[in-house]
Image (tube, rainbow, N blue to C red; front, side):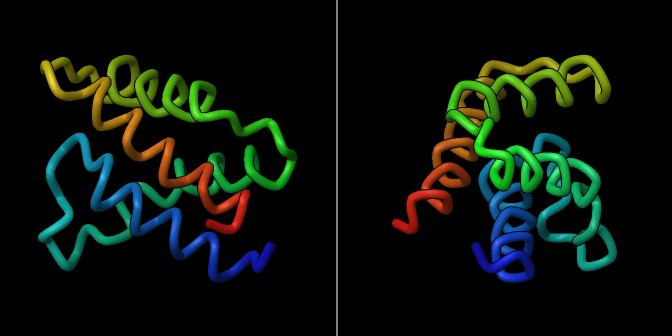
Length: 91
């Protein structure tokens, strides 16, 4: 697993697929989710990254830490998690 490239891809996925607070179009906020992308990258490298585990982690961050709640949130978490797990299999 190419560490630097995959971290950049995870960062992009979180900004484009997950983006629970809608900052993807703000240039100054491109690092908004870096702390979470580091954790997700750790899950991938430790091979504890199922789609469900990552989706649950992202959902927990959005609902408990960011205190968000809206209908599409779970779907956004699932979509981002699927894209991230595909990195592990090299798809």
